[in-house]
Length: 498
Ligand SMILES: [Zn+2]
Ligand SMILES: [Zn+2]
Image 1 (cartoon, rainbow, N blue to C red):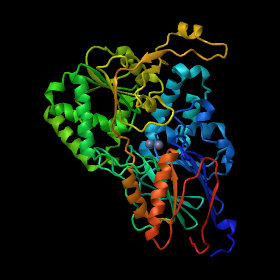
Image 2 (image 1 turned 135 degrees about the vertical axis):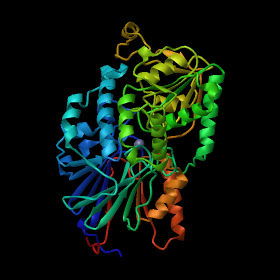
Image 3 (image 1 turned 120 degrees about the vertical axis):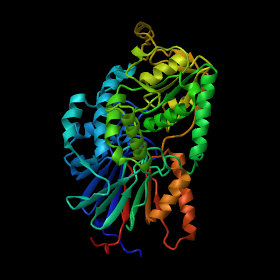
Image 4 (image 1 turned 180 degrees about the vertical axis):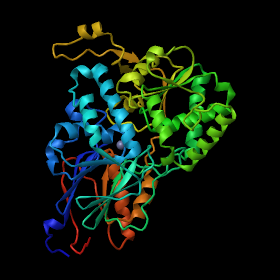
């Protein structure tokens, strides 16, 4: 058993980002001379070059294929940088819906980035032109369809989480690796939830560990609690701010709200806003990809079409034609009077529309902020949950005042805003709970498990839990939780045959 391992029988795994953290996901796999890169994200709590994965630590020119699991910025936003500013020359794959949404989303994030308050100290990582010029290099693929690229076999499976999200099965010289990306297993209103690929013996599982061992409140209870919280803010005359990532989970929340409003006439005079300059464009993408969603939304699709036909309203209808939601392109057109429910991006309140509204509404104790996503360390969304007395103004400081406030070091003087609004959290982030993750890991039954995409403390709790399950096992499962830039070498016996 202790005979020396031939290096050619080792799998090399390296996190360039997303190791013991949530953000800037990027992992490298090397086996038998083949190199696969998983995701190319950015870190939401950092700016400029420091938001990138540690690309300098690896020769990207050796990468054969790059797989992007889903369109979220922590998984996809540094792709234009990889394609336009590094020596990467491999092939890039993502699912059809991911590719469609990625195009608009990145274009928007470049534009927003350039006009945000912090743009002055931001190093521009890539331009809109870089993004558009590199976009055609991305090859779209379908779920359950296998592609072979320089003898690496790749198959995407549905991952739940957001539209188009994929788990990738990767096969190199007979070694089977499953990468979950971000995934969810609970039934939601529009997505197909993740399942273990059938009849495939997985050798290595690379899984997210966002929630560690934490459990989720059951879906129906969570929805009821969310609606109770929203309506009680409205009933006291307040405004509800729900910071959301522009796309993905926002659509699920809009379906929940629209349904509730349809059943409760007393709220129908209170507007629900979806503030995103991408809202309309992306709703078109959502209409287009109904086929990639679950049976619930397909049924809704048929019902809505029948409704609109009966009303002689041809050309309208479809599941994403929401009755009580108004899209809002920018705050210039927003009349801020009376109660409302506002879904605004970005989801972690770093800057932009959601931050501007937070700064405007935080001083009034009738108002409420409701966090529904996963909040990364170092962002305002994480900070606001500690209910601080006051928060720093980044959007509402007037230019002149900011100029005068500069110290010799060039640091802007902080203007603080009192925080009296309520803050509550109900997770609709669509990551597996600790229990769901553990069940999935047990079902996959890979002898090697690598944990990524989790803050260190969450990841360590999950790791100990998984190791404790070894007591009942004949073959002990190896569990790794590598830090960024820490190279793992995992031996595999040569009797693997392709
Ligand atoms: Zn995600
Ligand atoms: Zn993520």
